[in-house]
Amino acid sequence: MSLAIIGGTGALDLFEVHERRSLDTVYGAPSSDLARIEIGSTPAWFLARHGQPHRIPPHRVNYRANIQALHELGVTRIVAVTAVGGIAPELVPGSLVVPDQLIDYSWGRVHSFSDDAESPLLHVEFAEPFAESARESLLRAAERARVPVVDRGCYAVTQGPRLETAAEVRKLAADGCTLVGMTAMPEAALARERAIAYATLSVVANPAAGVSAEPISIDEIHAVLDQAMGRVKQLLHALQV
Picture 1 (cartoon, one colour):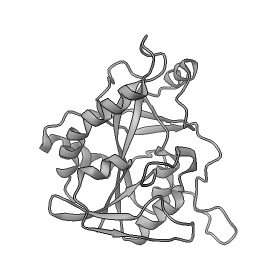
Picture 2 (cartoon, one colour; picture 1 turned 180 degrees about the horizontal axis):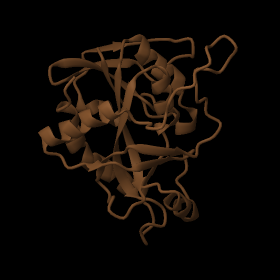
Picture 3 (cartoon, one colour; picture 1 turned 135 degrees about the horizontal axis):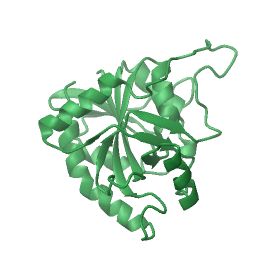
């Protein structure tokens, strides 16, 4: 199976699970068991990034174990579903975005498989952090499913688990970021090191801090994500594996 979906625990509800497989890697256990699902009639894998139940904060995810487990299963393409805040005014809650760039503001995370003397030193090319082939597969699926998506955007990766301050968001906007989330790195870089084509489908859950005059409501974030999952399901099931 060449395709894997990485998402939050709730995203697994979009699929029928045919098998669960428990794996261990040299980097430890992944966040969850691997669930075998189907995209159309083609088998694929699903990994719950934050565990089952949802309990692992973004800065504590074992990203290396997650990517290594998928690599060992023969995965060559990953679609990561991520919840983000909208920085650009046009990215209103409920928007779906297929970003093409990122800036990493996270810290203290293990960002490479080249982390000890026994591992080969990898200098991967990363000018385009999201694989264009994986991005194009998402965009074509959106067309087939007739689900509107925003093509391109710059994803700011923050540490979490807290949300950002308004001043931080102004800084991100000045840097050219259009959306902000907590999980695209080191996920994208580790996938690149394992030669896995990686792209993210970002769901705008809320205006980023300071973008709207209204305070951010966690209940509203959950409501927006729940409402958006129907369109996410349509799009993912239109992927050609």
